Picture 1: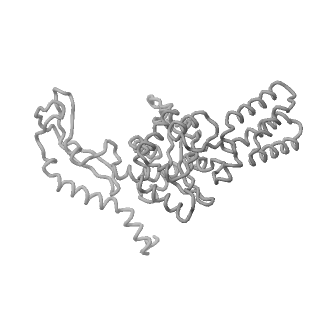
Picture 2: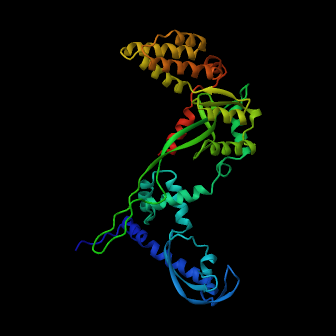
Length: 391
């Protein structure tokens, strides 16, 4: 028989494997010591009607904590009038309704907020020696998120002012602050598994399956532009309608988190009307900028339709049009679109849509003057935030 290793690493792993058994025993003893009276309680008051009731039995409950699995025997009370059972010790110990207690939930939520649920499951097991299913990770993150609002996760007004002061130091003009808004489709999973069926005698029930769903998350991000780098201020994403993201942005405004008098504020968007409507309502003096790179995608779409049989002509037209817009010659682009002879009605409609789009956003595509003032032309700041929430 091979001799068991006595190296420090082997001994460390041995203790690590048994640590929860040891620490759980200590925790159980502490709980019995500090709640001895509650564990021997014979009478209690019904929380519903206030009637005095007697203990019926000691009912064990097994819970999981970061120090291990504990089994607690609690006096169980039942009110016949209210038809409700309760254990006062659960309240005294502030137990979670779930088997995994608050410390595990907190650790799991922090981990699952940084990496995909499956990876969080694996890392949690490696780091703690305990199990945490990806379903539980999903559940605790969802429960934590339900109780958080934009103001709970945002920096304070003082912290934001400090960041602005650091960027503004040594500069003649106030720094540029960007408010970028965008929507992105993100993969989600439902709260419960689908396809669960009851088993029959001598026959396994069908295994539950998760069916992922794609939903649109709308979000915004405030950041400072400092010599080509982004300085984070605050950001927020949520799955919901325009009104809901608008309410979150309104809370930021009303809380006075953004000192507009200390910055040159601009709003960058992809042209969606909900973005401009919201920006004008809350920040009417901010410069509005149509994302140059989003506009470039529209140019490619028109070029593909207009010059479908000539890839070289497509590239030439797109690059020439982008250059004119980049240097502020919008009128030239509009005239060029008016003079294009389309091969069919469908192509002509694409050209007319682009003309109308540029005309509608003409105040937002003055890229020449915007560049000279130092404003960014793209929405890369919010796009990178979208990628983060889509992990």
